Length: 101
Image (cartoon, rainbow, N blue to C red; front, side, top):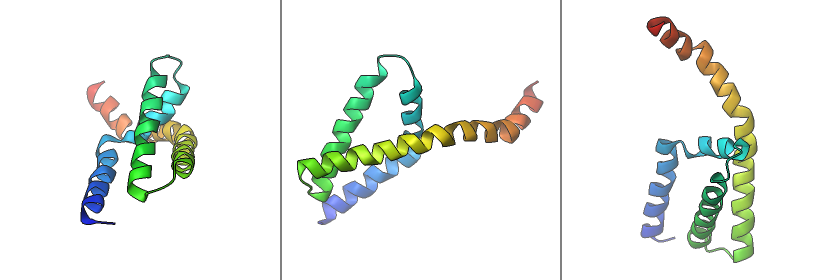
């Protein structure tokens, strides 16, 4: 890989850490509103193009990598997201409620 691809990859990988992008996916899966589907499809297309460009994959492999990565993220998030809410309620949430109650 050349330096430009490495630099763009590092920058692209740093954005989800700041934006907490993987937290949104499980919420979109369980949401019943129809406007979440275009967002999911658009993000899958963007990730497909990024995988295809960065790793120089064939179309079929890029589709498989995109679907597997997002399925794993969504399944893990379906379990971790509720647990993080419980952890918040018994830690920082208890302090916030105590301060402002």
